[in-house]
Length: 90
Image 1 (cartoon, helix red, strand yellow):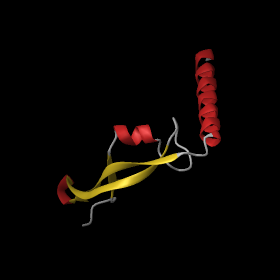
Image 2 (tube, one colour):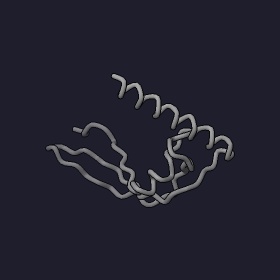
Image 3 (tube, one colour):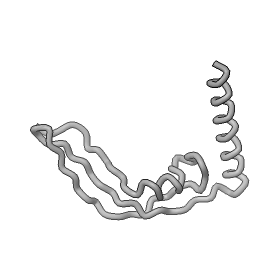
């Protein structure tokens, strides 16, 4: 139980420090080129993947997400975004 509480305290402190530095630096933002794909479920348990192109996605220059944006380091490591359309059309 102590290990769990210690982990939670360290995580909370890391987020608080990251948020403080993010605000002190003036909420820095950047953009990352990301390939965007659309996932379309079809009949018969099949799936279609459509390439939508490459676009610049805004990101936060921080360790954690801030301001509703993913951190830039995460987008650089995962340059493909997949958007799901939902259930198949019958």
